[in-house]
Length: 324
Image (cartoon, rainbow, N blue to C red):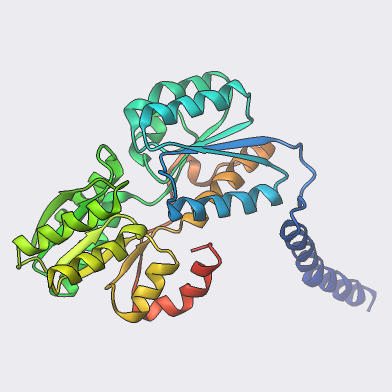
């Protein structure tokens, strides 16, 4: 009988103790208080983002949430130019941060400075772009989606929708991840794919370029943009050109979710930027605290996930709060 009573008592503790601990940790994180008592380490994230890119707002949202939970001081810097991004990384090294999160959209510009971080004893995780260079450059791991696989998923989706001719809109020249996405589309799509290079920092120019392309080639029945902010612009361009081409996009935000619900967009490819930011900070914390590393250093995939009108209603709430 005593054994039975002890067993029931232990079972009760097991059933509720863990849950209560999780609830306390969640409450502390929600209040901006750390859920752990590890040292106040400083982690920095330096990306290739341009100004006003909502995708990177979502990445930062995830990173900041993890930082609050893990007692981390979080720093962020960005620049679309590879050399300036590298300079920002060097500035973080000079500040002697305890961990670095970087993107490798322009790998040639980043190689030397990542090596300097490693030499200085600063652990580095790459995120979003550069999975094929991450290990070579000395990073602990990479978090994001495989861009070629994501492109292939788009090509397969276009096949299912019966499309015959697509244009892939690249808004940042020199970004290897963007090239890989369009290469992936070409690899799996049974129809024809043409690349269209535009200047992403000039949205009116983006619209006019897409519009001119659609006016000059009436056979184009699909436009694929490589970032959520460019999807509404492509929709406007198609309308102005009198084209019935379906607009699809990589990445998700509130406007994309709304456009999916209304039918203005066909589908989106979600790589979960919130998860990229959250996991990057959390994995750095785990590495510093316990030398843990998911996947043995192999890339940790956060996508791709094809999102259609059927999924948009559920995700719209999360998109509005800035986490999807």
